[in-house]
Length: 431
Image (tube, rainbow, N blue to C red; front, side, top):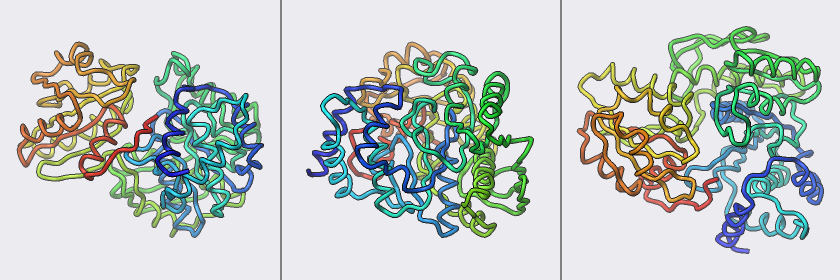
């Protein structure tokens, strides 16, 4: 099987949509010899911040000398970004070979989804690459997510906010219940900035399952003005003079959750010393989140796609614009149809001088006409562009060298713009 035919096969599995449940995944892994049992794992869920927390955790583990698998979703430009060992993407030849084996392992009465097969591929690759610890980001929810077949050494739930309501429920309590599904009996769990009914659900689930619970702001803290200089206080560690390579004050919460997760795993055979914590935080890479890819004007990519993430992004942009009063903010916005467009753009009304509405070539994508109807009138200057390439060209034509162009609203849009900047092709699989 060639790489292109492997990608075509995987792409074809998207016809099965999203199916929440674990039986198909367990059957598939059983036929593959249960590769998920051949390495230790750390499991990370949450509405926002779980990807950054996973990247931070993997970076510290690698700095400590572990051979580390990292499984995240979605990818931005290349499908292979999802599956990494010590930061190296899975090779095209391995995607081809593993896809062929997976295809042969699927019985005629089993209809796995794209995410289920991709997750099984990651587990196989990690097992056969000698991974010692795999850091696994939940795809959707937690309780019925394909990754939830592992028995981790520790898990984390970063945040709870309204997103994917059609699958997870319409209240933070019901979403919290789904996220809490990754909590295993006797396995320690780290919880980020979560309050209210969602916290009550998580606390009760942890108590029912005998899982030691560690909570941000109570049991561990990260204090400082931003990731450039901060301190960490946890149950067993006190670290001063820390620096993290990821931008944005909100990353302090993600750093705190990542360090606390490693603290929780320390008693279960995974040890990361202070030096590795420092080196891992300083060297971490996580694309598409407050990522500057060009300057003059600054081109900033951020994959925020729900109202909670929009507020975090707006806080960063407000600080940026306040410190540079001569600069303007031009927003390039594209979103999926099932997102809350009006609430997402609310923090940017008075912040952005102009907005350019666009869409990616996906069935789920909201059209520029839909976006203009729902949010266009909220901005003093609104433009439309039929494609991300057109949107980027238009924004650059209207910007000065001192301005900031921010691309946001969808990780798919961020990935497409990133591919344009790189001058490379875009993998078709974006789910």
